Length: 436
Image 1 (cartoon, rainbow, N blue to C red):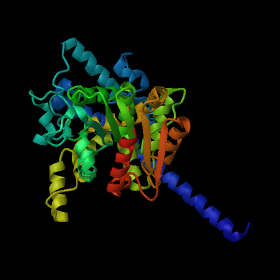
Image 2: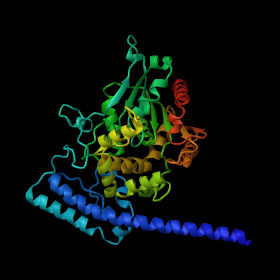
Image 3: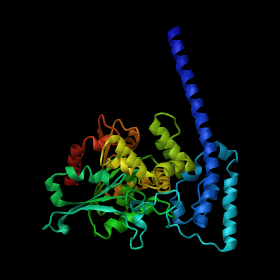
Image 4: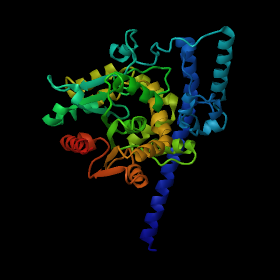
């Protein structure tokens, strides 16, 4: 080996060692900061909310009690995230504080009331809390594109659109709805749903935002009230997992399922392993690139993430006003608005209980669809996607070759696979619906 090659190899190895050391120090600091914020938030929550505060997940896995259907749907990543300080016992005070408060509440006969009241760290503007009104029936916000007048809805084809993480129904209504052909608009009734915890849909603090919660809400908000006995599903990112759960529940009703960048992982024998693998795959601890670092912080550190939501989501109107002033725009892009239209509680639980927790259920749902032989599953994935690895789609195609049709799009990423080629994407949807 030449001296030049040896020097280059040594430089790369030294650089990697230095980067790993810096990464270790940064995340060790975040471990400590999250432990401190855990105590701070418990004290502040106690002051502002009394017994209505929502418990955190700084305890160990053994703190999760009960074997009911709701706890079974909780993701192991909520309690299984490994912290150095947690393993060393530095989070014991927070756990003891929670046990002390529970015993005191039991002695006092306190009832956990007021969870419908907006939390002090969440935004209280009219748009964010409109779902709390008494006359509101807790259904999801749904945008419906009906057929032209004079055409009966009974003869219509129905399509349900599900958006991804930190998004809303605007992802579809502002793009695809406007680019479908007139013939499609004359024959298809379109439903764009704000998923639970996002957009204008409810964001309850007593909800765990499991896959089951999403399926039940969509059933009550779209399928049952509109009497849908036949429909297509189109979903992006996180919405793909919900779409597969819906399709597995209604295999005789669903005609096709179009998945864009599905966060799918083959299920391991141990469901907990699959959930934790999903957390490391989609939000692994890393400093670079910056977007990946932000995802890791918001997904691994519950209380640090709540601080960011307090600063940005609670004050989203101020940030939107500042952004308008700097960009000289009257209206912001829907993606800029959707980014902060959620609560920390809703985003945190959707990340863990849907994206991570639902990973262990996907093979079961796909097997149901595979046996039904009546549902067509089409995957569309950009080859430059940095959010959801291409292996996710490839693995699904490999495991269910007869069920899944994979279409890999060149030179597009996680969002530009749709937003960068809206007309082409609309045409591909029309082809899928017509051939189903």
